[in-house]
Image (cartoon, rainbow, N blue to C red; front, side):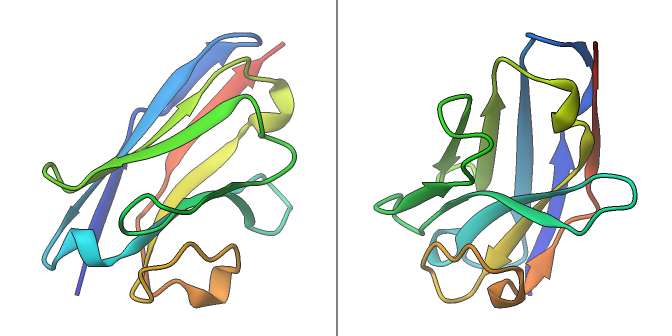
Length: 124
């Protein structure tokens, strides 16, 4: 079992930056692949970024490539999402998720544990 708690969301102007954190507890964090997803009102939850357990594989959605950076600190049981050059279209609830595969899946169904989400709102 893994418990995930996101933090760092908030209101920011377009062009600004935020850093999301996801703290994990309850199991061996370093064995899990970790991902970030987001869900805007009225839309499906979509993939944002993922990182494998040793950070050897990292993938991004095309919509955030070059603007967002995912990273992890296994000593702190935390995964991060640095978001720069934010746009109003980035407004959503952001969720972190853990995959027991240890790899870096981009498919939502391959994640076993989810956090409660943190709201990110980008104003124009």
